Image (cartoon, rainbow over all chains, first blue to last red; front, side):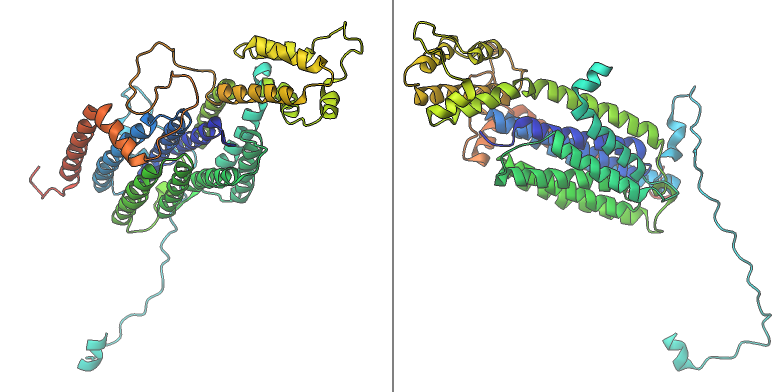
Length: 143
Length: 337
């Protein structure tokens, strides 16, 4: 048959799936978490299409079409949810939503907290001397 | 544990190296280890290419498979390591495009086009819009750090090893490799000299016909192959002069049998299940099958026979999802809620 066999494609699908799982668990940005979930779906779709090819049976490809449909629905709903969550907390960080956890669990504290933002430097200011002169009309229209 | 490691080291080792690279590449505040992580990750990818999916024949298909799958995995790693979500979305587009290349290699042109249009064309662009809406102020603290990177990588490593070792257990024919090397050599033999070099010389006196040890081995390892047919090899070997053509033909048959038997792995559906024939020959039917030449027509027949109800449900799901997305995302006026 062909030089590339079925389990090679299945291995690539498994690697994509595991990479997506790591991304979903480790990243904080809601959008990247969702992209990782989509990458897991790509791994599964690759599996199904490979089975369809090597079995000579179109059922795998039909399944993949349904995966596409569900992924499109999922993207629409998830992006709407992400927009709404962003409006509530003004950030995409998923750990800001820790209050959705089980009631008896302790909150997770960040191991590496962000460094404090630099203090605003007090610059010396000259006291305004005298009234502000009137600008000529032409110049003001340019500024 | 040690047994597992010694049996599946070719799975465990590249996965460990690759996941270690991913662990170093995940975004964190200090950026010292990023180059080291990139090098280790690339080494893991190369090792996986050499060990997991090694193949001898260099054909156009092999080269395309290697480059597309390498690009897909590379894009996945890039997506995990990007600080900027816009770059992450573009890396995801790279993953999708290379997966589409693999789809084309797998004789699914319609799915390739549909995936490019739906994923790379619609979903990624929508993502970019949302990123622009949500992150006008630039990068946020969410992109500078990871959440429990060590535990996440450990979980991914265990998942990867589980998947790959099950795949290797089901689809590997490494137990046959030594035998199949001999079988291949005999199948390619042209002259008696070739055969003697592989099998040795038969006994000089015709009364002492010996049987080949290779024949017993084939009978033991491949019980599904016709046993009497294998026995014929002894006759061909002891004939004077040796029957090289028939010997080669017999071993070519064995080769084809092994290829067919081990292509689909050791997990097969039971033969007496009543499976639908509309999408192609059912998977429990004997013999290698080909996909229909008309991909779109075949898919249409499959969708509107086997999956008619599912098609209707998918249409309803799309409608409900679009209504739901509008209802969730619409900006409520102050005081309306």
